[in-house]
Image (cartoon, rainbow, N blue to C red):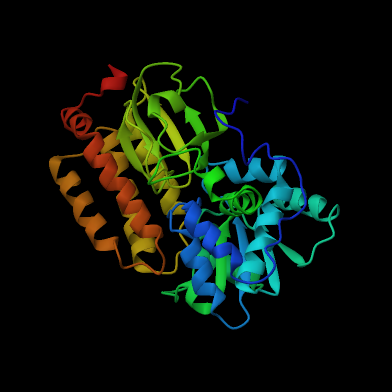
Amino acid sequence: MKTLVARVLTAPRAEVPWQGGPGRLIALAQEAGLTGRGGAGFPAWRKLTEVATAHRPVVVANAAEGEPASSKDAELLARNPHLVLDGLQLAAEAVGAAKCHLYASRISAGHARHALDQRKDRWPVTIVEAPDLFVAGEESAVLSAVDGKRALPRDKPKLPVHQGFLVQNVETLAHLALIARHGPSWFRREGTRDEPGTFLATLSGAVANPGVHEAPFGIPLNELLQPAEPIQAVLVGGYHGRWVPWTSEPVSRPGAGVFVALAESVCGLDFSAQVLTYLAGQSARQCGPCLNGLPRIATLLTAVARRRATAGTVTDLNTLAGFVIGRGACRHPDGSARFLHSTLTTFDHEIAAHLRGTCRSRR
């Protein structure tokens, strides 16, 4: 595995850089410009500030990583679990929490337990195993699992930070630990002014360098993804992400750091239909948009991919996407609709060809 830069994946174990009390790390996180690495990219200091005012706050490190195209959190916990645990407990100190939880897949949870056995910490950490479900990493599903319930999203929940829960992706916590150790100026040596630091990227598809890599924000896409064959588009951010053209533009807003390079020899509509079929099967089945809307969307896009559709099918897809957005119990329908819109826009010429009964990748 090649790393483009070396920070969170290779940081050596060191003494936890305790800050001496609640609140003191928050200003460092703000000065560093650290944003969440779980997908939304929300400023970490704002969540810390909100939770620090709560009564009996709780901190949860989220490494559920139900996204099939992502393995960065698993890689981080396999290679550097102590850095994650440092960040988790520093976050607990920053908000004045008495409880810490680490929520991860079975294998990653095992790495965390092994690391905990080697430590003597101020804050006890409870390990909670996450099921292998796409929606199990959604914040309200995480809190349900930590509470001993099924890892399913709650219906229209209040934001966790407003309830005293700090749920942070494990990569975010690892960066937080390094900021506490080295300071904001060191953190900003990589990346750009608006997006400082590095991020972990899971690369797959038509690339010569698949796997997890650490890269600075602002790196050109064609430098991050070294093509193994001609590429027509890249899926950025995972199955709730967006298609972007193959370009030398700098990487911006990478979501959860997922990059799937689509070779020119692969049908983008066929690939996207498979993704939407997967997403339809991974819903919590708690509301109409997921229970009825997503399977119908997957069926219609599959018909387009298999050249069994009409122009009316594409119209129906756009209509259905509008029906599911903002109406689900969680954000799963919204993310799925966003992926659909990106597919319809990026592969519009391919759609026209399929409606004529042809396909560029299957001449």
